[in-house]
Length: 127
Image (cartoon, rainbow, N blue to C red):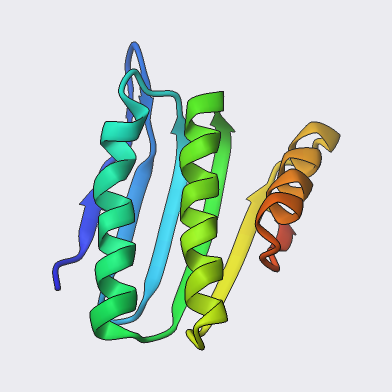
């Protein structure tokens, strides 16, 4: 199984940095996610998670370090969290850390993700 490494870009649209490592199950999405074709960008990430949970079946440790994401990115992030919740419910080991800037609005968004997915998410302030 291949790793995914995408270097973030800030141009007309903002592409987040992505690092998914199959050997360790360590996954990180960071930066800003404001894309024109959001679903197309996130589709390979969802495919990777599906393949990992069906073949590798190891622990997954997700770190979200997003300083900004738009509404369409939010939907894709919920899809990722839903997949992680299903994997956890089937016996998979899952840890999710959400790093946030000190803003009530961001914390509300994380709380919405928790409510929507039922997944335990560790909220960690960014330094």
